[in-house]
Image (cartoon, rainbow, N blue to C red; front, side, top):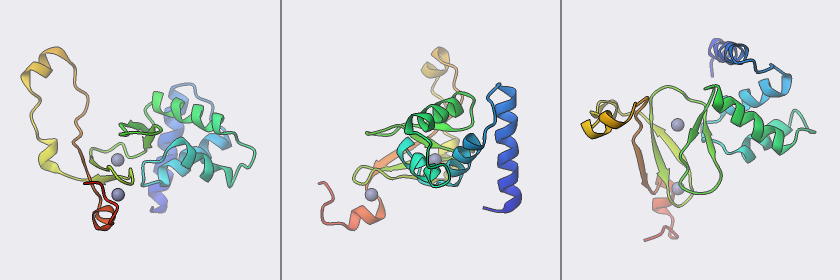
Length: 151
Ligand SMILES: [Zn+2]
Ligand SMILES: [Zn+2]
């Protein structure tokens, strides 16, 4: 990531925390930075492992609570994981997801056409829609080639 981008992200982080009364601590900064670097929609466990390198005494519970607090103030999205633990997405710009049913990887992709899909009237009548995301499931490149891919 470019340095100026990284700084912008940190500014965004600090601003959100201040606006929402969340204290900015070195641990929280570190958790956010690890999260922001992650392209794989990490689980609490992955963020915990990465953060522990800098803060060996941090607990998984602290990381878990911090991530939930971040999602509450809109710093990170919670991703609809097919199974297993909750996953987080630090990329708040519009994009779509491909879920691999075999390795559980969640891969980002851009698709302007998908973003243009109209919201059906029966939905609009009932709900207030904030965002649109297309989620495709299947096998990723790696798993398509693997012999243990499910039929
Ligand atoms: Zn896969
Ligand atoms: Zn994503």
